[in-house]
Length: 280
Image 1 (tube, helix red, strand yellow):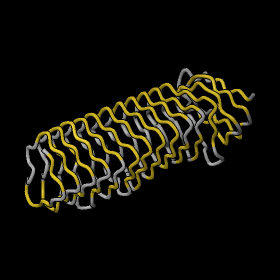
Image 2: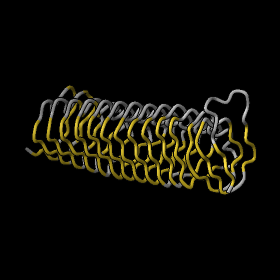
Image 3: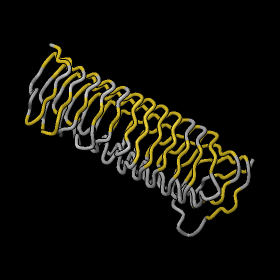
Image 4: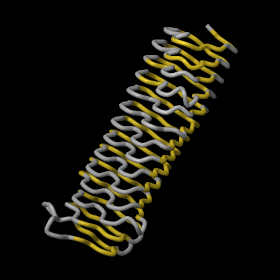
């Protein structure tokens, strides 16, 4: 069934729809307009109401607009594709499985992507996005920009390529994360993480990558403000350029193609305390 050039509002106007195509349709303020539905395609549509796609299976939104009033519009759903959209709504993507987003920016990314699984993002930027990706897993990201703190806390199985991430306290207690060719700026990156790997990445910020169980660095660089690195971490890897300071790494082998301004090994060093720091 296809619906074109119509407007709906109020409570549940298209509730429990199946096999529906919407073209140039406007959903005015109201609640749960397409809840409990499946196999939905929306093209050139405008969503102004809350809770649009809740408990919805297999839906695609292309060149659509989610107004700020359409907060919490994608929750508890499965197999969503969002392409070339404009989104001003906060609190999208909660407890979902199967999310593909391409060529879409989110200027109001408050509480995005919580408790979600099987996520692919391409050519996406998210601003004002404190706590994005919290408790989410199986994530693939390419060409990405983020402005917001506490990103990727408790996230698992993450691969990121070509990103700029500005986020204090990012990747806390995250697990199985690999990041390629990216710039990461913010204090206390990766604390208490497990199996974190960075390839050709650039870092800035204080006290980075501490308390990490299984940290791999390949040809990474650290800005001058990146100090007190690797405290109580198990580290293997190579760093290009100079490093301001390293403090009490637990074990491993750090190869530095430059100079270390200060190596701090004090009475608080934890066993085995045998990390090799080598200037090449």
